[in-house]
Length: 108
Image (cartoon, rainbow, N blue to C red):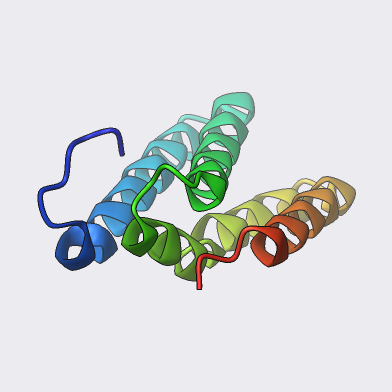
């Protein structure tokens, strides 16, 4: 998501959705290869990158808004991952972090 977007208000939904889809497809690839650590890495990396862009005041407001609106995608993927591997406590920590930061850095 470091590309220069000439019209961020118009391209923000597709930009954020494409980034999330790329991260989730990489995680699915590693899930098929039974590489749990890399799968978790890509899920967490996607989640944290979206969360960081949402909190960054230097990012255009339209992109920040889309990051907030689409944060549920990597969060649900992490929930499914941690639930299947009996680590729900890790998920709850991530969910709490997302809740606190979304209230603190709400771009609306």
